[in-house]
Length: 147
Length: 147
DNA sequence: ATGCATTAGGTTGATGTCAACGTTATTTGC
DNA sequence: GCAAATAACGTTGACATCAACCTAATGCAT
Image 1: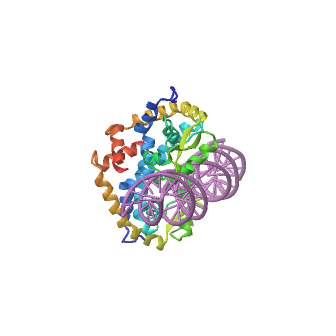
Image 2: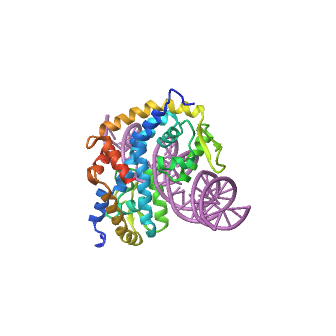
Image 3: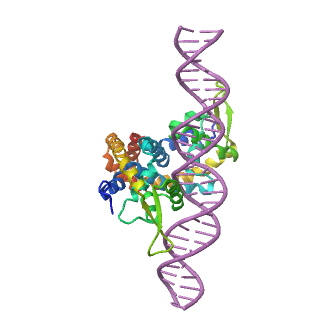
């Protein structure tokens, strides 16, 4: 039945060792956990991270967020649409560069963020506590090397 | 300008410490890297993992893959559609349970997998080599604790 | 100054992702 | 045996994700 060129051992190798698979799986599960925590506040984990990144003296441009969030520029454009529609974010033309737009938290967006912060912190502390080997900092370091 | 209830320090706390953000970001970047490696073979990283999981003596049911891939059951249903349409996977009714269906690699799917395996291995080895602190095994352990 | 590469961003199409809800089949409790 | 609970799966709707392709503005080099 099994193709000798693709033995079960290859399947098990991917299952047990593939960092891409392990990372995707852990990311999905952790995302669901944060999504559940943030749901009462009407935010997903990605929306929380994005909104929080806008809390600066000067609103960032889309391109500024790419290295921070690690997502494609066009993904960001799409992710902003529901937030703008819900009035949590608005974009203003950049004063110095007509190509760019600055992203700004609205009062509603700021209120949403402030309300959600304790939930994020509680879940985050709980996750941190489950990490022993190397501690959370070791994991963050390892993730930084991968990214 | 900045709301005193949501100071910059909170924003920096999320940016620097949020494991959810760090995990999502690393997962996106690594996914793009594997996607690029697998693109000549017409597969994404997720499709590769999924197809590889079907390489068993007896095709698994959808529910069997949920813990392995860590994704929602309905996500799996959706992910299978393009693969079935392209003739890489087909589903057959389970002999013992009329509710379930078994997922089976087609000959084309198997060929695709075999062809893609060296690319996966090369990229995977390269990623492994970039991890020093704790080594790849330490990271996998940490990810398992999170998931 | 002007031409051209670069940069910021948008749009489209395909796929990935999940919650909420519904259907059908199995199992379990009595 | 049969009713209720459970389990396996599908569909829908909303959002996330990226590659490929496009427009417009900036900047630099001559």
